[in-house]
Length: 419
Ligand code: IZC
Image (tube, rainbow, N blue to C red; front, side, top):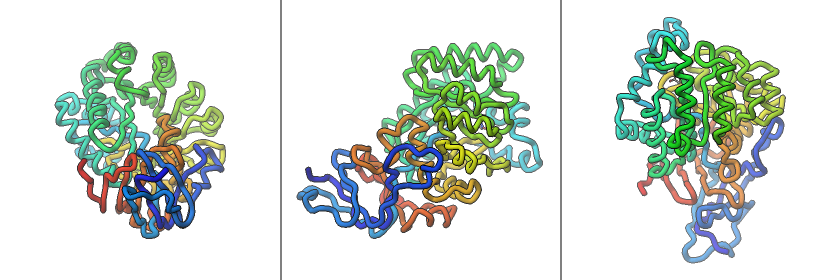
């Protein structure tokens, strides 16, 4: 068989070959020095060391010289609130004065101010704003993202968000995987009777449209938002209805969210800044991905999640941006990789595993994306750097040169290639 595309003269290839990585196994990103790979019909058909065999080449084969650069799988961002109206820079002053994130929410700001802006925005306004952010992500090497609703808090607006995600996934090179997050906050109209809103969440989960448009369901299990008992009830029902389940666990207050994630067999437990050791053990035992979001910790000026303990205990650790207008207004997964390295003390091999194969596992995509191995989708990034350590060390800038999605170039020299 001959190839449609061969990338050769790769200085360092992070293949992430060999499956999802838990604990110790995260230390090995299966790097190959001096590598090549071949692609046919959008999938990898051969990955090897040294020169590519000429038997792979015919007149139509495109040859790409990587010029000794670093190449990795397309990056996967497994936790974003991509689609929302407005922004919240007006909260910055309060934040600097020391007003806690949850107090801003309790006073009707925070998430609730984004809910107001998202309800007011049209489908096209949400689409254009989200597309702009998605272009930024793609340019930074991200080829698949998870994307949550949760700024509607009523059926109509939750569906509006999910429909924007579907349309973007169809039209944009980046693939979007949708999560329904009606359980993000109690909306103002139900402030006096939160139980009424919980009943509405159950009814939204049962909506045919919501089920068609979203693969996962998530909940903000947090002090003064949804408690562990409510989270258990809502996620258990979501599971029965066929959703994969996720949980914002122990982000600010240690409530036992990680323990619940283990008990319910969540696909991922996200944040975990305040997770207990017992909770971490539950995640490892039940193979729940520990999805750490250090950009949020940085922005809220809190203590970082204990990634080293999670790795020591055998967790599958992933890292994601948590791009959202409140606690983490950045699309930059490369910056998150640096935080993973400097603040979470993760090695370059661990960090790249956390934003590729392990992040793919956090959205049930580990069999199709997240590594450069035969049979997988040919999503990959060619950098302007020569090795993995460099992109974490030299921080705050974009190291990407070219991005390919399903074997097709979508970013060339940091410019998006229009289809
Ligand atoms: O808009 O503040 N934590 N949800 C849970 C968020 C942060 C997003 C926001």
